[in-house]
Length: 225
Image (tube, rainbow, N blue to C red; front, side):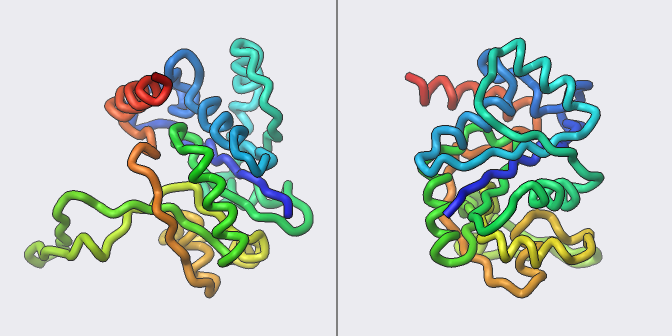
């Protein structure tokens, strides 16, 4: 079986209040995106890497790779208007049967072990969606109503990688885009497939705000030591 990883790097980093897209921000001396690609490169299943990037950032990325002497093999394809379109563009680069992991470019701390687990579970069950359970109490508040406590033991916070047999993805991404497609699991579920959860990692944070970059640096240094 062939294994692939589609790394989605189309974000502009608006919530970081910075001009540079967050996937290019430096984390311990090199761009976040390079850490993410390295994590998949370390996976023992040796997945082929597909980087989906805004077309206007391709040249900038090439220059970064030269500056940092980054030589991990990967294919760069054009991103789309929505994340949905970017994933669909990444899928077009894959031929034949495969197990495909889709991962946020700004989750650089994912372990090679979790990546391998997601591939093996998807190969067996059709898909594997990494998730962790909340540790805080949670409530829901609907417009015009009082808030209501929820059972946190029944809730999961979804991460990436989200990994699938490619047949599921190909069928799912024939659908037209819908606003409720917040991740690949929601697209695949809408296509009629059951979703399997895989226990994720607390350190597998998504860098969204400036504080996240500080935390990621701390966790990376702790891991290295």
